[in-house]
Image 1 (cartoon, rainbow, N blue to C red):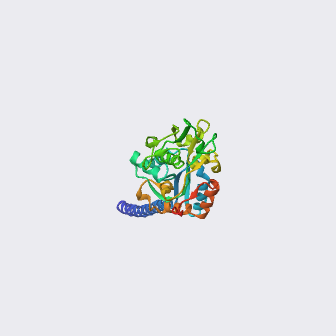
Image 2 (cartoon, rainbow, N blue to C red; image 1 turned 90 degrees about the vertical axis):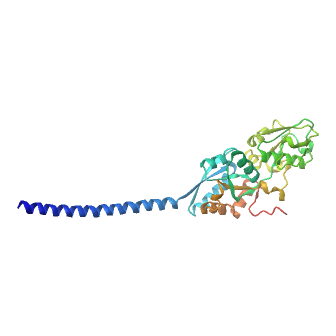
Image 3 (cartoon, rainbow, N blue to C red; image 1 turned 120 degrees about the vertical axis):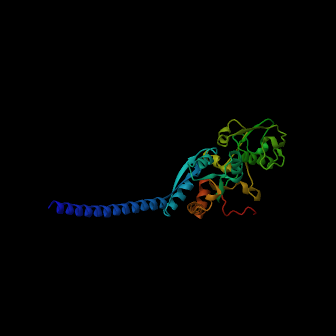
Length: 289
């Protein structure tokens, strides 16, 4: 009896071991499937953080709304000055940004040893001169103060605007600074300021050269400008664009969906509305006309 009891007990134990093995295998399969399902869900959720200037929020909110229907969720990160969006892109705080033109980016990449690239054009906004004291740049008097943006590219544009209006003369530097002024008959005091401060300096200077988006945020009306930069074939370096961290991101399908959603007639109309006709959609613009 004792011998048979031992044998029966062994058979029972074997049956339990087999059942346990089956249950364990089934559980493992469920866990694997769950993990795979979780991974698929994560990859399907396409969330992209885009750094923008606050003045572009209405434009990008519209793009955001249209892309949501295509399964792309844009998170907008707003900035108020030009010193932050590229650093945020480099640090991974955003995956794309949209605020700069090529000349600005070239200077940034060189200075910071980064490899940020353009992946799709947005718009071009002529730089303008404003004043609370004079009606034309020709009204500038000897010793007057003029403020310009201090970043290399936009300072160059500002000085070229003054040169176009025969206020100063410059050498042939591609991105001139005040050191490239060869003639200043009025002995103007040209003050270099952070781009965001130029509009705020209007009460302290005879004229201020102000970037388009900064002017918009300061509620300066384009029609009140006393001088406007000409848009022609030489203006291509001033076209703004959507940028990614490096060239390997250029063909990212989700990023290209964002570019495609931006470069539409709906966006073009909104650009003209938000900037009151002062800014031009640039993805199809004919710079040779």
